[in-house]
Image (cartoon, rainbow, N blue to C red; front, side, top):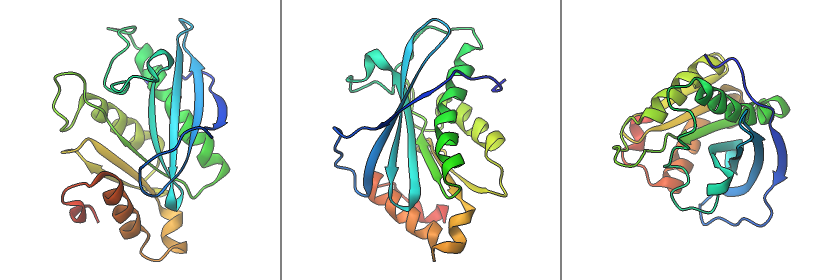
Length: 184
């Protein structure tokens, strides 16, 4: 189901983007075109502890506030949507191949009218993460109530004392997550 993907282009760091998020270092941008020549933009925001947050949208929607909460409507009843999602994971793998200490996180954004808890996107993305990122290399943490997913790299646990706790503290400062302690 998630075996094929489109070719991604790494555009480099977005030097014009500043963020008010704590612990933010830089944003890395990728793009790709699907089989209909529709252009997508992938963003990997880099934070402390070599942690990256994945998000993507149609390039034409890049300046919209709700760009992550909309559907393109291009793939209803089609398996092409899985190819788009799998392509976004290629951006994560791009960094993981360069540095085996990367950790990743994402929020499965809610659609218009959908509750933020255990969203459809979250359920699909988390299934993909469990299949592509093995548990011997990554600890998988889910916050279904927030549709939040964290892939914590186990290599870092040996090199950074209290690594999981530090990453969760950072995430709580970025997003102000309720009851984050229960995930540690």
